Length: 420
Image (cartoon, rainbow, N blue to C red; front, side, top):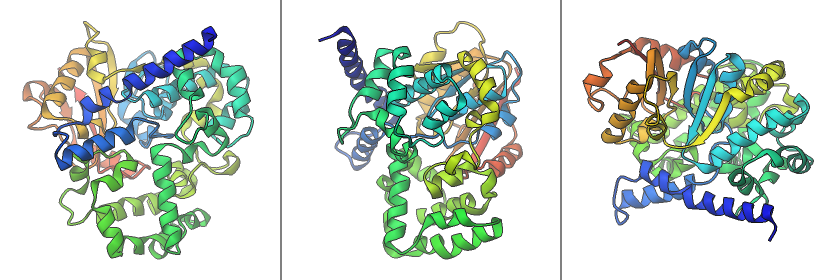
């Protein structure tokens, strides 16, 4: 076996060895023999591969809430990497992207290599805008692979359950891959079986027409008895990356999950103009607009290419738990923290550990942002007041950010600012 091949095998073994352990620590709360325990373990299995080809938090809202200044440091959960790179393209800051999922780490590292080693924007866009180009495999082998670590190469050059080399995802519509991509595709299939087509919304000329198409084309699905039964099962939402522990928070006080999902999808469908909302294009078109002519995340916009390329070394990626990473620092280091919706998964003990590390490593005025499935912040009564009392929280401000978050799928956006 050649040295390169041996390194790839070792990388693949390391990838599989790490895949479920940290996820299990984060998700598992119940014994394996219980119903909830079985649901948690099924979710861990489903979540251990690629989940989010695109992150589903609005980076423009993040940037406004963080109010970053040049030279500042941000620690963020990586997910699909869109937001970490968007922060760097918008501000001259250093971003540390952390994730428990090795597939997300591999995706983030591929994106960094693609920015660094693509000769031009068009090459980069073949992977992450059109994401359906027959030449991407060759480009990867020639330009990107030589610059990747063994574990990352092992992931992209390894085979999925269908025997495909994973880098081939970029020649067959990358944004339809992974757990979320498959979930969205299944939603389209179910809609078409019922004689309805979600993609019709993309032909709307304005928001009024978007709303009309949603009411006539998709809203009736949420009133069908068998669909309501299905949507009320936690496993039905695993494709959205929602673990059993988050299901109840998402449902809140609503009598039925179908009503919550209908309201969130309605907002995504017509809460914003299509020309401004790339999240709607992902949901209803399963990708970005053809030719890159529609809205894109900031890091994918042509006008940001040169800035992103100049700043890409400001972004680092790490396979680690948030509190594990912060425990390495002995003094205040970060000006902002981005927690996505990960706290919805956590126990009180895990939340307290996380926030103890945050307050220890936060610089004065540090801002912490996160989202929740439900509308209200989940921290009071769960994180000790000796920690939480050092932060300023404005619920009204959070609701204003939530209203302008184009992804539309979360109940609440929250900003905590360290005061002392």
